[in-house]
Length: 295
Image (cartoon, rainbow, N blue to C red; front, side):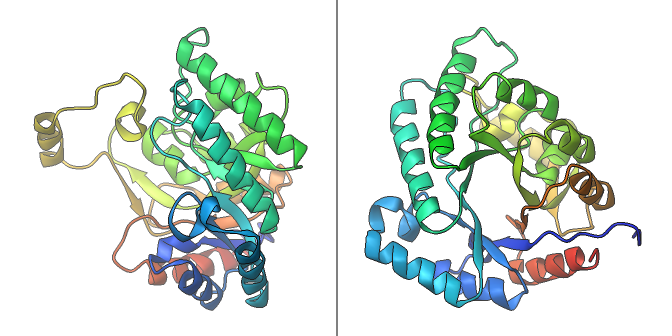
């Protein structure tokens, strides 16, 4: 570990990674040494439709009382993101309500997946995604906020080319280095430099790519038929395509990743995400210490 590199960013934790509910997860985040939290706000107790004005004030007060901040809300609506024009109007409205909630809770960032950006810029799917993101970006900009697309489904350069077609930076980037390593094989440090004008939130996660995989098989794609159960069984017998692992055990070069974030002047959160594993609390605590070793 280089003594030249110093990471001063605040450390966040995705509350849902603990798997014990929001309020208990908030306490765990504080216990493991996080300064902020990211929370899923799509369904369940954090569904914007279930939180009236009083509940929102109480939740914000509760989080403030723990000495925590919200680094971002997660507003991933699943499906094919915004590839399907027929369902986009409802998804756009739901996304706007999540952003409203975020602002009321004291953050101006909602992270999401928009679906894989197609190579065909003249196709219907590209156009549908572009129109949805244009509307979301303008709405976010009106609130001085951002919808942040998570990296991974496509190479950084292709994502940048898509974002460059929008009229605002209201749709920006939530940078996840492990997704890039595991799925596209893209270099996270170079990806940070490529997307430097758009990065508003980041994840700290590690993983290994075990063999090349079609991103459509991982993230889905409108009109793409995933492999049959028989094909999957054959693939499974020969091993997985990738695996998420604890920080430092995978192929993300964190020295290079953190250096790149420093280089572009990123001042936001480094938010720990742990989506697998039998001991998430232990892995998250170790991840906090991993980052603190760079301070």
